[in-house]
Length: 418
Image (cartoon, rainbow, N blue to C red; front, side, top):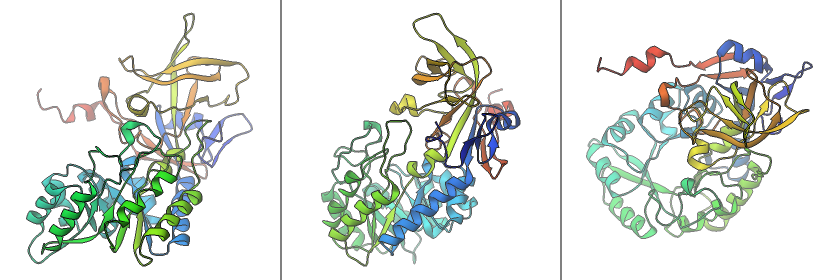
């Protein structure tokens, strides 16, 4: 189990899991459950690894964190202080990134359906690069950018690459809702060349997410190169993370070896490369603690229900993502039992892990589910009047709250119908 948890996790002499030097039971007591615990030092180490390894292979390069994977101001601030930019996918992420202290020139704005409000916010905030996803983006931008100014853009291109991942996180195949075909990209390049308010800096491609083999990610380079020579080539993100025992994602170094080899083969040597890691940056640097509410034995399955579920982890329902779990003071089972771990929500699909083998669980046990740092916080919801969970940073034996748990008052705050 420790192999799946953040790098600074351990088991103390009492047999209790610690994350960032903090005991899991004390974290649960202090902050309640469910709670999302981020190992801050491990997260910082990952950011430094990405920046160092890319610079060693392609000096004129930039790492921008795909903040949609964990759009928490404290997480964004870690990335900013470690020298990374931010890839954002909406107005809220622009604002939280600015609160985190990012230089707006280091923001890359994505989105297949950007509103005029979001584009205006980007222009007014000085966002460095807007990724044009189609002709409507270009029309809106040209109407928003004030006279005498120019907005730098990239064009998102569909590279025609299919990777081995869930269809809901494939983005580089023909028929994707994201980007334009190479033929359409050439027409946009021509249009921008006549614009006084838009300046083309380069092109962008993204193949998908949770991709364990880097070869499909590198296969997007050649289609971009075929469009011509540019200052910037944004090669996206997509490297997968280890969620379960069978996952074997490429290391950052191996991924970048393959990616930069393709860049050297196809791209101008003086061009700038941008990459956008998200899932592989944050997934394994956080874990969720749950309290067992009830255990039902005696039927064809043993159901273990916890005080969270699809309200704090939609990855299972959306992508059938596999997770693992353990009892925090009995990570290595001595009385192993195969169970179905379910959530508290009134939905038959609210299943976290089926099946999973843990030490025979009891009511009020604390469970840990590793690798919940990506796309869990960002998709947390209020189904069944659920209060979204807090986020805690743990480091060197100290824990600090960075996002509080929602209150009942929070749930009623937007309801004006009373």
